[in-house]
Image 1 (tube, rainbow, N blue to C red):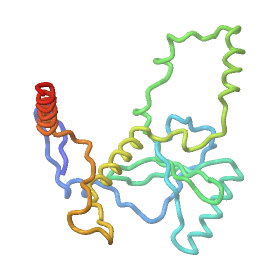
Image 2 (cartoon, helix red, strand yellow):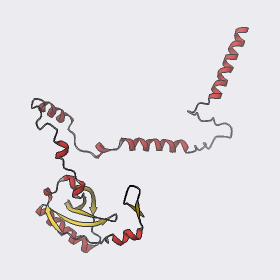
Image 3 (cartoon, rainbow, N blue to C red):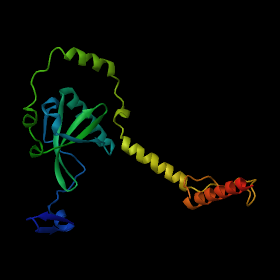
Image 4 (cartoon, rainbow, N blue to C red):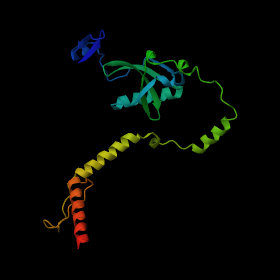
Length: 211
């Protein structure tokens, strides 16, 4: 079920049946409508990649033929698919032994870059460029997926693992008898216990001075 905003506080409710009535049927085959040179599509239109796989021997043969033909001519295929109740334009790009299917952004979703970059200086200081190039050379490394790990996600996973470990009950050793095992130390300080011990120590000190 979804809602379509007709006004500021006015919505039209759409049921799942309403959405199914207008959704295009997803098919098992992909019809390529046209081919375009790979370099003719600007990077900003590419949205999300998916791996495309054939599902039977006949499909594998057709898959290999279209893949190799597109790679030889340096073109990609343009098609349309229904993804999440929405018809999307997609690109089929040969990649090694497979094909990568990219969903494309619509034209009205792309904002022209000129409106953002128009106030930036066109030319840089030529005397500074060699210095920056030297810095780039020092910091250039071979690409690795570890360069784009999420530090926040890793920290959260560490916290979760520590909490799970703290919540897991410890098993007693086979040779231990009841009442002989010492209580595990805790990081939680009991304020009343600490105050009581402090008062007892102070009282003992007072008795010793009276003697």
